[in-house]
Image (cartoon, rainbow, N blue to C red; front, side, top):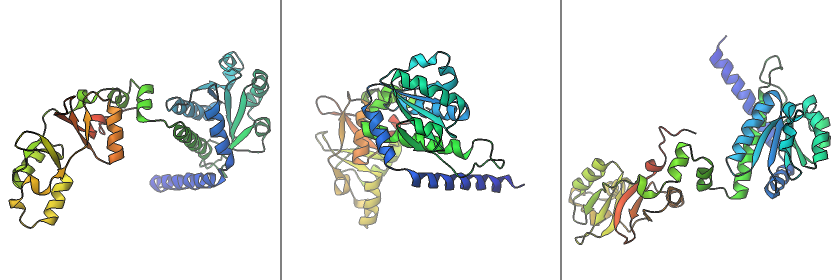
Length: 320
């Protein structure tokens, strides 16, 4: 058997099923998002077996992006873990069949507690679906498993719908990078984002003057490896910036580039940030202005450094 071809078949099968699932999403998604958003309690996700593992991941993603959430194994809930649930909570019950004994058995005790119930199931007409307020449909026509036994496509569908729910809630809450940093202080990105600009900036500032010739500008930009250089006047005041993009445009625009000086093609003015600001603020400024470097100034508006996107996010070594 050609396992390369077989793997591609499995990918295509699952992708096709996901597309069908996307087409089934309706008004219930809006209702679920608003219900969870307005909740005074937490979102408790319950499942069993492989769908339980997916539920654990969904809960973890929600908790790290602004939605208070915990995962409780449905079987363990019947043996004491039900004490983690309160009447202000919303419980999301995950069961592909909608008839798992452990899931069905927990419905009555949850209703007695008084919490709200939502289901994520592949059978919208199941016993479980009839017992809850809202149903998120994760039905697929077939599993990728050739025997139709091992949960494959169905667990993928549940995971993706969980991702959709997580992102919808992130956006409903206006969740930002600084919030992510707060919930991930031990991660690489979290550690960077709660740092100040001065902790990560380059202090070896690329520097040329208005009269600096093109070849020397190229050398300074290349030597400092930041893809840019600041331009200063004769009074040592920063008045502009030259980026890689400015250099490319100058080459296209001018015939005699050897005769160019910085004043001929620099960008007047520049985006700047105070050295005491958090990296979250810098990241937002870069995103809004679609740039990858910021000029750093102190409280006297003197240029003291350059902050690059690579100071904030190490794309090679970033771990979660």
